[in-house]
Length: 321
Image (cartoon, rainbow, N blue to C red):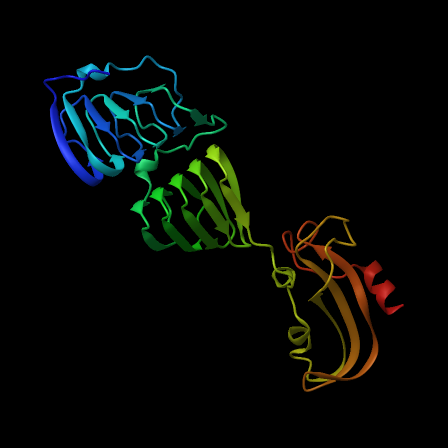
């Protein structure tokens, strides 16, 4: 690669952002890691001699000629962030390059040790349009109930989402990022472009991986606590029974069970239904005529998802005799 002798050369240090102010074609030379954001290159993106390329844009198109570069950015560089260039871009001599969905019209790689690309699925919207975005090195952000998608770009960033109540797309590009999502009855689809990223979700969040262009990315879900299946505790069942004989039903966690005796599935949350026939005084049973355990249930076979938990006539007969 001889280069264009008439190109404008700029010596920089530290992190560098390549934006609309640069005259294209632009060459970014010698950065450690390079992050190419969605919709950031209006022309061709050519990556020369990287170690790894993690891309959500298919590679293999005809490369652009680096001798045509009119601007060369080099020097004692750390990481590079390509955010918006009107024309072709060359990335030369980087360690790892992370290319987001829709980042360029075409992508070519020359001399890469390995290219990671997963075409299993693609986000329905550009990550550039997401309502929440974190970019850089060791950034930290907390957000509540985002609605238009969340993207994280760079390395060693931390993002916490709380009180999520709307289905969410999470886009992670880079390495070593950590994301925590907690919410109620939401579906989260995660797209990974990179390595060693970790996403964890609370027990009431359903999370799936849409695509993984990389390796060693983890998606973890907290186990559902048994209390989540309990519609009425023992104390709640007794409440209001001030005087007289009453039959009450309630549910309790079934401790120590790793599988459900009812459906046979391996389960995180197993509970048992119980019933008591007793004489009550001021909300407390002072004499028990009969009591017993009913059916077991877990997150796979519980009636909580379809209606209230009630004992069937057959279960009541089996418990009380």
